[in-house]
Image (cartoon, rainbow, N blue to C red):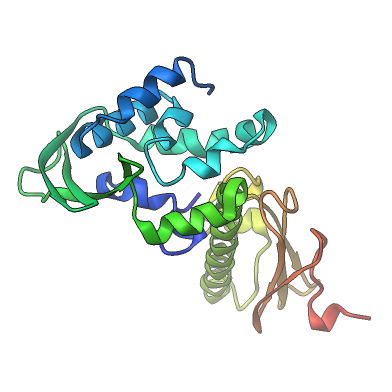
Length: 266
């Protein structure tokens, strides 16, 4: 997944991990909730990162504006999202330093720095809000976005991120074909050849990274090419089907089926 700055669902998770160049079942949740009522902003941030590192994802997200996105998930839905959460957990450093805390009314900022980072590096701010007397990570604007989406939030965030990832990959393939042709008498290559040449990443062969299946078709004379991409799981890993040729990228919701390029239509 490729996470970005929050203001829309596709960027949401990065709000939690950006300060550190990153962003289960809950046993003992009653005690956890009670302790949460008395936590300071600094303690909340420390516990969030600790819970994420220990893969106690429900407890971690309960300390943030993303709690409504977790609460309604079934066991199957939670397990579907678990690989995404585990990638976030793997990116969190073992040690962090808190360099200060500022509170203003119902808002707070905790300044966090990776313990082993360059001493000259500045601490990054983590924003919090007071919600029902409890400090949680996030802001009011994005809290409303999460509440409105509910349990669909993380799925929608993943789908939108995958759509962006696919477009970026298609652009990379286009540049790769141009680079290959410039060294091979203006003849283009199939996908395995581009991968072997190091022009596109090998993980394009599976949907694990982007959630999409890619396929490239060459004409017999290797002077034209078309790339298609469809979601591995329609509605879970993506909704749009994509097609790329020398005229650019097009996309559309085809229910997971391939999008036909104009020159391929009957």
